[in-house]
Image (cartoon, rainbow, N blue to C red; front, top):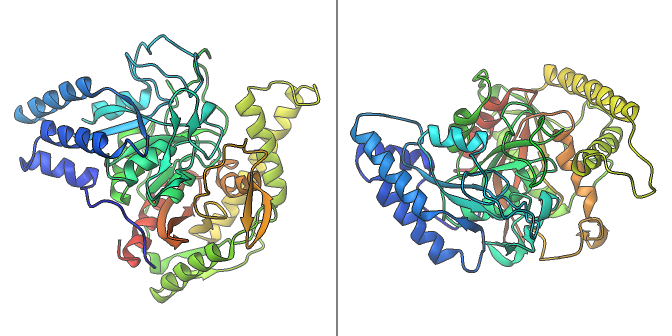
Length: 443
């Protein structure tokens, strides 16, 4: 199972260790990262907001902290974040032309925590308009190309994030996810991504321009992208709102449920074969993988409710196309259905440690500027509505579960991944399970 890789640059954990040991400095690491962005990004267009002078000062400050004997988990490590996060002094547009000429007054909660952990923030990466597509293209910054094939999408909405990590421009990134927006770019670009449990990490400072800061958006989460499980764990721990139990379990002692069929989406045969090959490897290593269970929630009903809640969340309850309005009763009915769905998943996870499932039905698609609702994708030669693939995202998003994506191979010379899912607040468990699978793959 060959996994395409474009870089041998060190991971964030490796770079942090090199800086701490004196093998390099934050200033040198930051200058090298800036040079890679300037060399590689012309054809990719991932790092669209650049704050290099501020980053250079942050790097000098990090080296001064180290000289004083201070330590921090990301001390001196250069990285970027998704454009939708506020950084004090920089504009946040969410890809909306003319949306905001006024720079953010302060950093988002995630950026504050990353800086407190010692990270050097070089700038921000590209997105689709309003974060509502798997295609990072907008009228402010243009289109991001997949670093493996510039004629294909890098995914979305954290498309620039995944492209920057996959190409080796930066070791790690921070994105967000409501409809696969961390997981799909990780899958399309061949990197690791973690969608945290809903509510585990603050969304403060991750708000569309012109919208007053309020409660965390329904269904949405923010989380890391990287080139290793260790780096996902490093960034997760640096940004958590609350401590989580570091539950781990040897893969050979785990019960895993394989989910390859969904009533609302079709899976391409080549993708299916890749996942089945992975399952054979897990079973050869002693893991127990089941193909069916009566404990699964009604996935068709779950997807219907997810799409209703998603449409309300991303439109802030705007009138439906037919002019009708969402009522308070409608919303309460959906949250009740969501709670019952969470209970069903909890019962399933009393029997299984993990669920292993696709991230989407195919590898990265060729550039297609049609709206997501009008786009199609081909499954074994048959064109289908592109948006039905949201079923693989909603599988995790509606119940608010954690999921870790890791690359497992390739289809049509493009990287592909899977998502490893566990019960709520078992984020460390999914990252560690993915780490063990990566070891089986030789990662």
